Image (cartoon, one colour):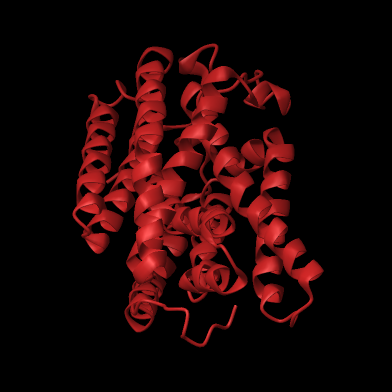
Length: 342
């Protein structure tokens, strides 16, 4: 076996899994953070909504940290060129995540100080609203590629990331995560709160479906993501569409868990379709795809990748086991009468 090819392939797969987990798990966090400000008619209702994600949100962010760390260790050239080229976008993302984390932790510890609570609510909204849009713009740019110089450096500035296609990608990601968050709220609440979440999911579905369809058709003609690697990316995207349609039907029937799993499948298969379509390219050169940055050129040495693989095989089961355990422990629905921490 040629380990110089096999190990980069393995780590590209692991990074794909990590970012897929991030979009699925943080996706509903972002959706809930936005919807709590819209659906919550009073402080108690908002606290119920926030507490649905209370035991999970910080652990869900670990998927992003682990994915970024794995990229840094396994593909340092990819990491360096990507983060230097998209520096402003990632700083905005980081600021938004900090705002969300701080507001989440301090909101329930401010007593009856209405001004601080409103400030935390605003920070929570911004910190939940910006990341889906920024991630959607980023993913759309991954699909179309970037302008690279002879040294494979990204030469587009922040404004170069913005185009009608990438902005549509940001809107699509926002709408999908709102629907995903609404389905999570329907799964974790009862009574009128549950009905409100179901209602907003049904309301947002047609908008999300139309935007996603337009984006997908546009991407089919604008990029090779869906046609590369024997059309596997296209097949995965179609599976995502099926999951999304089924989620709407299940939400209408009141099957909250199944509907949530289907919206999870939607985000998972859309993410997989992008990574599969990119492979084996780390950064696509929009001017000449043959001059893209390939994972084999961006990878660390064989010894480093071997050691990382051994460590990952040992630790990954514990991480996944902890996630499953935490969701099992905090699986009950919340009501207004429960003791609310956040």
